[in-house]
Length: 197
Image 1 (cartoon, rainbow, N blue to C red):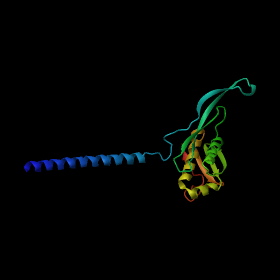
Image 2: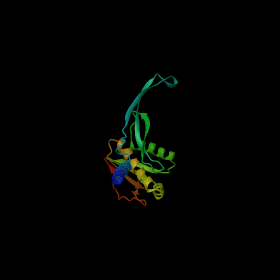
Image 3: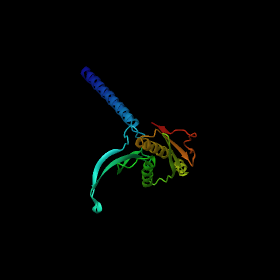
Image 4: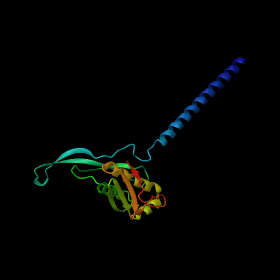
């Protein structure tokens, strides 16, 4: 009888130890899952640094040309998704002798918005000293009213795309119809910088 008592105690102890180990591993697994979730990028500033990169040289022998060689580069810019996913890098190939300007970067950016069916109009892109000001029309307010996340993704994507591709610029500002930027979610004072290097 004493043998059965000891065996029962040993079995109970083994079960308790196994339950403790199972609980410990479950807690560690949940902690790792939580850490993985918090480490997911909200934006891509640390993942991808868009910079013009030489890609290749092509031999242009079209229409009887003598075969002029063209050096091409890629311009990386950030694209916004209508599904509120984090901004993604996109690329376009241009001739190396083209001047990369904020206007060029914005043209590719706004084209990518059309693919996502985001209707954003930009009145102007102006450069003064090392500052770039992007002036939206009131369409940005409609976007902001629908989704604060999309609004922030747009502002992040524009400012990072410009600063990463235009070496002579160090800050980006936003306005709406030449007035300080103000939506239901975000308001900037006149001349307030959104992002700077």
